[in-house]
Amino acid sequence: MPRPQLRGPGVLHSRYVRRALEPVARAEPTPASAPTGLLGSGRLVVAFIVLLFVCQLALLVEALAPVRVVFRILAFGTSLALLALAKGPRLKHPAKPFLLASAGLTALNFFHPGTNSPLAAAAQLGIQVSVFAPLFWASRLRIDAKMFGRVVLLLFLFNMASAALGILQVSFPGRFQPALSAIVESQGEGYVRSLQFETASGERVFRPMGLTDVPGGASTGAFYAVLLGGALLLSREGLLKKGLGAAGIGIGLSCLYLGQVRVAAVTLLVCMVAMGLVLTVSGRWVRLMALAGVVGGFAVVAFGWAVAVGGDAVLSRWSTLTASGPSQVYQANRGRFLDSTFEEVLPEFPLGAGLGRYGMANAYFGDNSDRANPPLWAEIQWTAWAYDGGWLGLVCYPLALLATLGWGFQVARRRDDSQGEFWLWGSLLFAYDLGALAQTFSYQFFMSQMGMEFWLLNAAFFSAYWNRNAAVHPHRR
Image 1: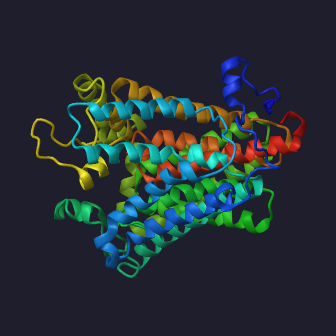
Image 2 (image 1 turned 90 degrees about the horizontal axis):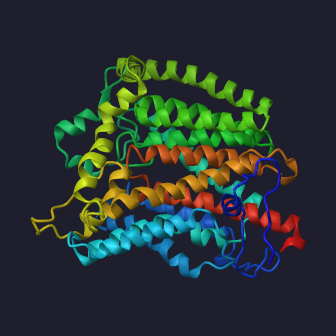
Image 3 (image 1 turned 120 degrees about the vertical axis):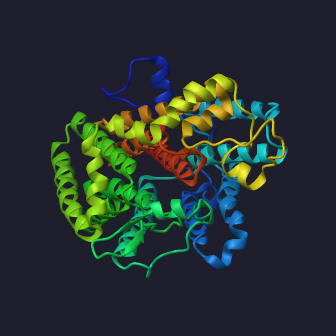
């Protein structure tokens, strides 16, 4: 089966990179003959996203507290199961070799003398594989541009709802507040109080949680409401979606300011600049001006409103970003964890520290009775990669992210409108992926549900693009 090829001036000249950026099917089924049942259809992606939302919302129900662990692992277990159940042609996404190498390094650490326990080690490996598993099973599915648009819209609506609820939680203290996470509560009264602030009305409230149980958690929803809203705003699919996109941008920015999570704001700025760069490279000046005008306008208005509601606490929190340089702000907060990874963790564990010694695997399945190998703490993703694979762990997974970024950029910069709006989705994915890479410097992004959504969205886009090429150029099948 000849390979559908990317053509045009944007294709890189290196033979290896060019081949890596081409969607390639290694099995015989084509879009015309691909499985049409649920396990071979793009509807499976929608169903899986709904499952992710259900699992997240279940954590907010106090009556389900005794079985929280079930909902925490259900999405991860389902993702693993779909590796065997999903049907369709196996496409060669450029990130796959690096992800397999990363998983292999983690598996080797199963036999490390520092491994906590067999159960915790299996859980650690299972979490890592389940997070990137959607790239393998979702890319097999029969997804088209319309289905991918539905996936983006579904993610957008959920995140916008989380951001909107976060605004209500600050505007009406106590009326829309979920129960506080037991893990956060266990940190002590002083820590819990540090997650609160005094509003302009004099009432003390938590930073908006949105559809999470963690103060400040609504900032994640706000971030994606703005980013995905920007793509909908630029879409040609009607005024309703454009209006939804604009509303998401306004709601997201308002919630982001109230949430006071500065790293989310800086990451969003990086993403919007990246999207603007792609629009500039592809010569789409009108859309660039539209995006800049709407986001810039809402950024000013939303900040004024957030200060009016949140008071001096909001103003003083955000003023710290301009009082010092971005690098100084990062160094004073998360930067020390990155320094510690290279100065302390890697010299001590150059080949990894063993499995099950940190995070959810240790919390739920760990046996910490061995004083020679105590539990470890990973605040950021880079530390987690170092624990799981040492120096090589800091190479393989980031290379997978760079390969994904490169492929998305190639699609985004194409000026051929015969491919529909794939350039728009490519621009979105490039910005989205860059934001995910940036967030690895802030927390364990690829050991969480957010990391799973990252690979799911990229896999769905890859499949939709390949199916489009196979349909337009059937003679190349």
